[in-house]
Image (cartoon, rainbow, N blue to C red):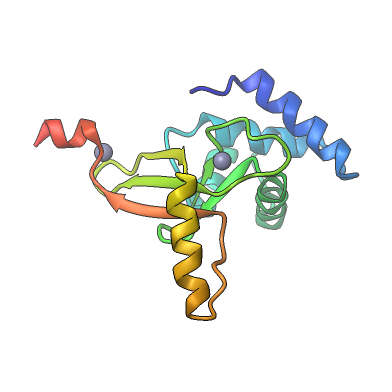
Length: 151
Ligand SMILES: [Zn+2]
Ligand SMILES: [Zn+2]
């Protein structure tokens, strides 16, 4: 991982403080477990993983923590896969649009910046239709390099 856990936790606490939000040990635990996952997880899988640390996690607490991390730009939701993934970059407070390369074989996700030209072209095409693009990222499905080698 390009983002060491200690740095992630420090950044998270710092961002929470800057946005006037509360940082709790519970949220730190959720983030730690999130960082421990091999790839993107469903909220349910995350809840299961948290049970190892906390015997009886409240689903609402975990969901609220996820929402909180998304607001801080530390976790992304992949709408097309209905899964959550830790941000792979240290973007700072403002999270720019990212491109997610989602492997349909192994489930791994790679987050890369969207080429500005590509983004401008997409937004322009949408604008011509009177359409405003939503979301923080472009989700591209396919097969990753490792899986392609295996087949
Ligand atoms: Zn990100
Ligand atoms: Zn793969």
